[in-house]
Length: 141
Image 1 (cartoon, rainbow, N blue to C red):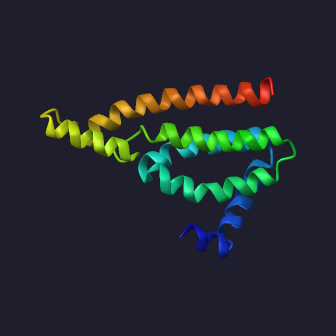
Image 2 (cartoon, rainbow, N blue to C red):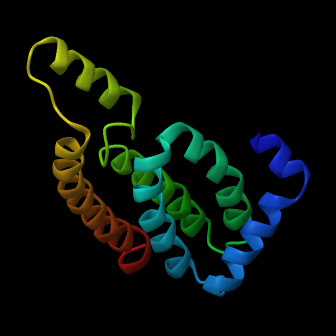
């Protein structure tokens, strides 16, 4: 499906819209990728989300003048998608398995209970990742 989006030009259009929205400024591109990746990958699941976003990030990274800023885009996607997988019970395959094991051990964990705790973990993790990305690639880059 992602290949079809690439072939039909949808990915290029999305990358172009993102580039226009951020004015091509690296920091203004990195932080939304991080901030959007976490909640979306927590709802959609990390694998299909990253498979869809990788070509978009690739297009955006190709337009960066500083190679370290291109790396920051990839790290923003990686960290956002990874930490976003902790948001809900369906955010990552491991979460689904863990909920099933807990239920079989007579210690059920509801979707909402998981999500309530996962939201806190995800928010703190993404905030720390934003600070890390800013320090690593922009403040001291």
